[in-house]
Amino acid sequence: MTAWLITAGQATLGLVLLYFGGEWLVRGAAALAARTGISPLAIGLTVVAFGTSAPELVVSLQAALGGASDIAVGNVVGSNIANVGLILGIAALIRPLEVHVNVLRIDSPLMLAACVLMVALLLDGTVGRGDGAVLVTALVSYIGFTLWQSRRETAENQAEFAAALPADQGSIGRHLLLVGAGLLALVGGGKALVTAAVALATALGVSQAVIGLTVVAVGTSLPELAASIVAALRGQGDIALGNVIGSNLFNVLGILGVTAVVTPLPRGEVGWDALGVMLLFALAVWPLASTGRRLVRGEGALLLGAYGAYVGWLAFTA
Image (cartoon, rainbow, N blue to C red; front, side, top):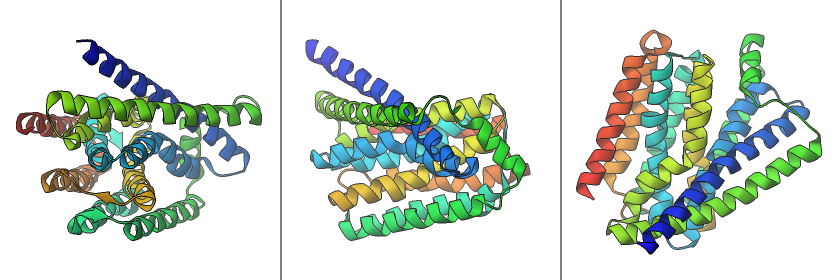
C-alpha cells in the first residue's frame, strides 16, 4: 500500500510539474519572441507548439537515457493518438472548429507524412542516430517554411493568433525567469513521471510500452489539452486544430529526432498495431476537417469514442 501511495505521489508531482513547466516555458518564450519582432502567427506555430511539446521531449529523453526506450517511443506514439482522439475530440465537442485552408493544404498532409516517415524508420526495429538527424533536419525545414509562410498571412489571421498568445507582461528578466523555471519544472516533472511509470508497469505486470502509450502520453499532453480547450472556448478553432497538428509534427520530428540523436531508440514492445492506430488517427483529420471546413460536434464525438475504444482495447489486451 505504501509503495502504491509513493508511486501515485510521484506521478501526480510529475504531472503537476510538467503542466506548469510547459505553461511557464510557453509564456516566457512567447513574450521574448514577440519582443524580437516575430509575428504572432509564427510564434503560435513554432514557439508555442514546441513549448507545449516540451514535456514529451523531457520525458522521452529521460526515459531513453534511463534504458526505458519503450516509454520513450510509446510516449511519442501515444501522444500523437491522444492529441487527435482525446484533445481534438474534446475541443470539437466544446465548440465546432473552423478549419484554416492551410491546415488542409499543408499542415495536415505534413503531419501524416511525418507519421508515415516514423513508421518507415522503425521498419528495421530502431530509430538510429542517422534517422534522428533526418527527422531533426525535417523539423528545421518545417520551422523555416512556417516562418516564411507566416509573412503571407492576412492581418485578420495575425490578430487572431495575437489574441491567443499569453499577454506580454513584465520585463525581459521576468520572461527569462519564467523560461528558466519552466525548464527546471519540466526536468523535475519528467524524472518523477518516468520513475513512477516504470514502477507502475512493474507493479501491474504490464509492459512499459503500454504505460508509455497511455498514462505517460496523456500526462505529457496536458499542455496541448489546456491550450486547445481555451482556444475552443474563445472560438479560435483553427488555433486549437493547429496546436494539435503542430504538436504532432514536433513529437515525431523534434522529440523522436532529438532523442534518437542522443541515443538510438529500439521500437521494443511498441507494436505495429499502435503505430497503425497512430496512422489512422493522423489520416482521419483531413477528411473530417474537409467537410465544410469545420470539425463539428458529431465528428468530435467520433474521435473521442475511437480514442476510448483504443484505450479500452489496450487495457483488455495488456
